[in-house]
Amino acid sequence: MTELSWVPTSCTLPTEQQPLRVAEWDGLFTDHLTAVTRPDRLRLHLLLDAAEGTDEKVRDLADRESGCCSFFTFTVTPATDGEVHLEVEVDPAHEKVLAALHERITATGGRP
Image (tube, rainbow, N blue to C red; front, top):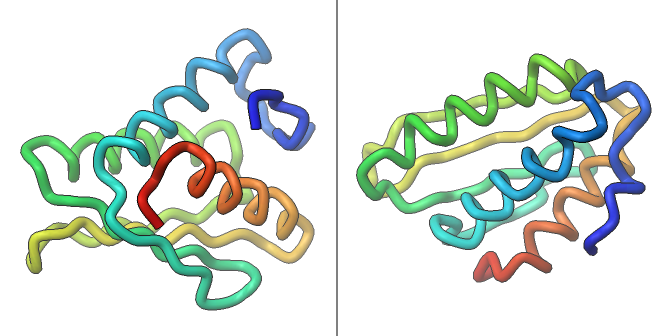
């Protein structure tokens, strides 16, 4: 998935910055993702290795993403078991965005 056609119009990140943000998420998934599950249609649960700086990187990206795509709710749980837990939730109107994110995660080489 190389196009950004799945990015919703409600995203306020300037269009020229969107590919850079997507690349940041892709890098995080490629470098640190250990597992992803979709417990229900409106929520993803990601586990990322707790390498030095991962927790801070996840929090920074989640904060910036919430700033432009307020329909996302991110919950980051610090690494206590060797992994950083990231919950990603959306409202029903953005279920397709979450599905596209899940697809992207698996397509980027994230191990799951």
